[in-house]
Image (tube, rainbow, N blue to C red):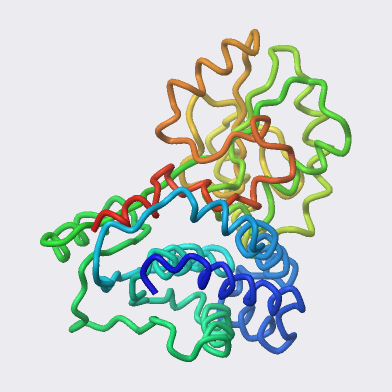
Length: 327
C-alpha cells in the first residue's frame, strides 16, 4: 500500500465511523480495571479526540498530502507504546501504517484492552493490515518510543544499529492574560485535569499577570475534581503533607496545590506551578527560551483543546511522518 493515500484515508475514515458509535461498556470496564488511573470519562474523551482530530477523512487527506514516500519496500517499524492515557499509542500506529510500513507493536501493559479493541476494528476493515506483535527476536528496521532518561540509554544501546525516534518528558502551560471568560477557565480546568494530569499535553504551569488573583483562579479550577482518579487524590494528599512538613508556601485547591515557582513541576503530579509576568511580551520571551521543553501552550491553542491535538501536532515537536518517510 506504499503511496496509496486514498486507501489510508478510507481505512482510518472507516475506523472513525466505527469508533463514533462508542466503545462498548464492557471494553471500558476492562480498560479501567487494567489501568486504575483510567476513568470511563477519560476513555470517552480520548476516543472522541481521536475521532474528531485524527479520523475525519478530509483531515487525513490534508495531512497525508504533505508527505511523499521515499522508499520502494515497506519497513518493519517497532512502536513501544506508552500507557499513561487511554489509547495514547494509537497515533504512532496510525503514522506507521499511513507511511506504508508494517507496525510491530509492543503495547504498554497498562493499555492493552483499548489498543486491542482498536486493532480488532482495523482488522475487521482490512484483515491483511500490516500489524504484528513485537518480541525479543523481532527483526526491526526502525523504532519509535516514549522513554525516560534512564530507559533512553537502554534503547540507544539495544537499537543502536537502526533509526530511532525517542521522546522524553515534555510540559504544557497556559498563558493567562486576565481577560479570560468563565467558559475559557472551564476549558482550562479540562486542560489541566483530564487524564489526571498524566499526559504531556496536560497543563502543569500557568503564566499569570503580576497582579492576577491566583486564589480566585484556584476556586475556578475546583470544578475539575470529577476529572481525576482516586490515585490523583492520593498524590495530592502526599504533596500537601510534604509541603506542609517543609514549611513551603502553597495554595490549597482542595484536590490540587498551586505553587509559585520558576521551574516546571517535577515529580509532584498534583502540583500546578505558576509564574508571574509583567507584560505579555515578557511571558512570550520566557516561552521562547523554554520551547524545547514545552509541548503545548494553551492561549496559543484555544482553552479546552489541549487534549485534542491535530494530526500534525507531533509529540515532542518531532515530525513522525518525516522520520518514517526517511528510513
